[in-house]
Length: 165
Image (cartoon, rainbow, N blue to C red; front, side, top):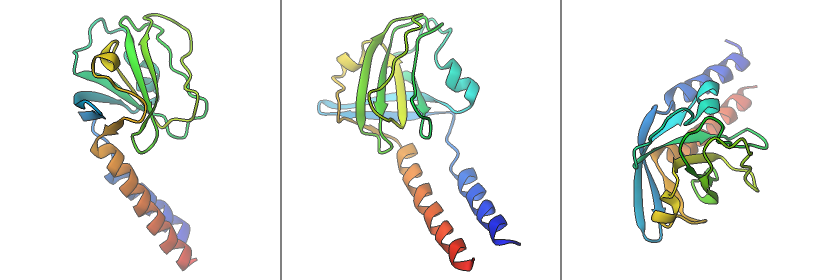
């Protein structure tokens, strides 16, 4: 088997072993305590585009997370979204780097973070104020840990293949 095929196989294996669940428990750690949610993970392009459009009610402890790593100049909007949402933007480690509160339902105005982000969490409008979520707070879930572990395993595998070449 060629070295390139070996590297490809290792990469595919790492990705396959690290697939996220469709919905999972999630915590925002604030200075006032922890807030728990059940978030749906928007994984496909269609899920990323649709987001929380067309729903007329969202349970208080639910929301959606978007993995936007690798996308440049991301922008969110509220087109066809019938309820106000708070958007929490974080870096790859889960640190909250920007917040957009009470996005206006049905608005086609772009919501653009002022810096590069890795994840966007959408929850009911008013949740950020209710739970006093602020910049520097932390998003917690195995998802962030798994990302770091997968990244480390990939680097080790890449080094081993490079040594063989």
